Image (cartoon, rainbow, N blue to C red):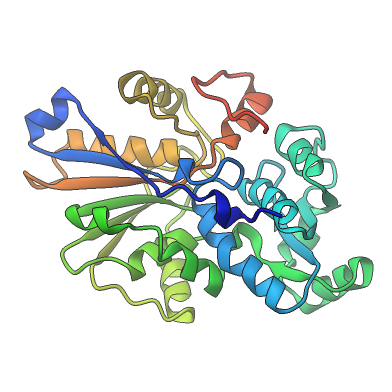
Length: 313
């Protein structure tokens, strides 16, 4: 049976050209993690890589994880588990969830059993009692946390940057649960600055990232900056300005962005370019973390068509 690793394509660095970049004397490129695997997209590929290897080492036959109804992590874990020969369980937030939405329909197609819990139980998902109840219901499983962030995920995301990334002075990534930010931070070179664009509303994310860095002993040789003003209202929230930017970005660069993660990051970096945030001659690399299936879910929820939609394979 093929494994996710058999399908890996080296992430390519795609240069982006625009009159504004020439005017500001900047270089901009995008690292296309969305292309590394046809089913296990973007940063999820790297987050799952060592977790699935560890599950095999432990002799587990079942993967259990958590996520919302439109979760990129649920989508990717379902596909990767099927490829690797694991049974998978997705514990989904919200008992009244539309189980026919594109993300959950895809997860079922890939063999994932969905288990819906109320929001109170979901908030307590990391407690001993909830985990024990799940073991009683499903048996022995290998647990991957919500969003996939743990020590093994950070080990994987620390491998995202290829040698070509060393040419860049600034890098940017969206922040959700923080596993990608921490992996990138661990692999920064001393002259590089990493901008983390939070898709969550609130300043709490700064302390949360500090806590995770301490927990997983992540130290960076470069600088890490977190931006909290580009969330557009909070996680999975949006404004028309964001939608128009995603459409413009596709028209200008033929690069698809999603409205949950990469669209907000792209918007943030373009605003910073317009407002002279970057010193002259800076070389900026934005990390495309995948998650394009989220565009399909977004259209399902809102009826708004985006210029690119993930196709189930």
